Image (cartoon, rainbow, N blue to C red; front, side, top):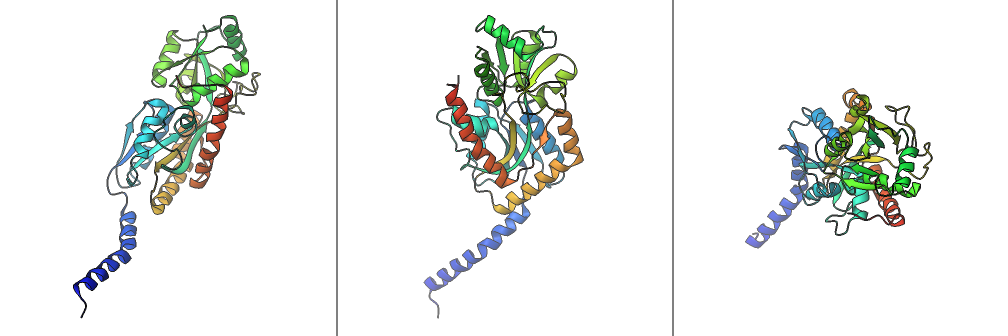
Amino acid sequence: MLSRRHLLIAGAASAAAASPGIAAAQTAAWPTKPIRWIVNFPPAGAADIMSRALAEYFGTKLGQPIVVENKPGAGGMLGADIVAKARGDTHIVMISSAASHGIGPVLYKDVPYDPLADFTHIHLVGTFPSVLAVNGTSPIGSVQELIEMARAKPGEVTYGSGGNGTMNHLVGQLLALAAKAQLTHIPYRGSAPAMNDLMGGQITALMESLPTASGYFASKRMKPLAVSEDRRAPTLPDVPTFREAGFPEVVATNWFGFSAPAGLPPEIVKRWETEIAAALQSAQIKERFDKLGIRPGTLDAAGYTALIRAELPRWREVIKAGNIRAD
């Protein structure tokens, strides 16, 4: 006859053997509650635009509502930290970016998370250039004219961005370094107030993400001078790259991807990977992205993780070479 001790051991072994099946069943039933989608930048910015487009697409496909939450601050790191600290939560995701996972971790001290170890990176969502713009009525008609003004009036030429540590901030600094001119950076809490001040004449220029600024270019309220990628933007075919404008060192791409906390079960990673890839190929998302100048991402989980791993040392070198510091 088995003793009570033997029965307890046998029961524990049986439960352990069954646990993979239980876990698999729980994963198969996922999602079981609303999904929190963290946008680590303010409304109306590129991350917000992409997040809401994708959340709308997934609205009826996952069987649970998606709740988009804007958690801006610290160059995108505040929202990223919320996701990093949610390890084990299979119902929280975010749009990661060059700011929060490529630049911020090497620009700022005491970053509260590891951009690789604390996340499950699932898919590259989209890429697009930064655009240098001036007020639609500004007499400045080219990058060279802006730089000549900056050289003639050191410290007086200002450029805004949606925040310290963002790609747009760094692209502006790359331009200043390449041109050997002083461009005074004015950080804002998001794109909307920065664009408002440009159109109101409070700043000379603005470095902004193409998707965010597209509508203002169409209405002529803002005038684009150059784009940061090494090829022209399809939606701005007449606008040169910085390379074409005489500044070959100024080449950078805004990249945004889809990420979750570390330790996400492989089955859920694969589900998201498949769903995101299908969304990016759908007519609904492609049409929306095309209008904004966003190129849909094609990198899967492995490829997107490799991109982040390569970007970290790249921006570390740029920041060190330019002696760039967080304000």
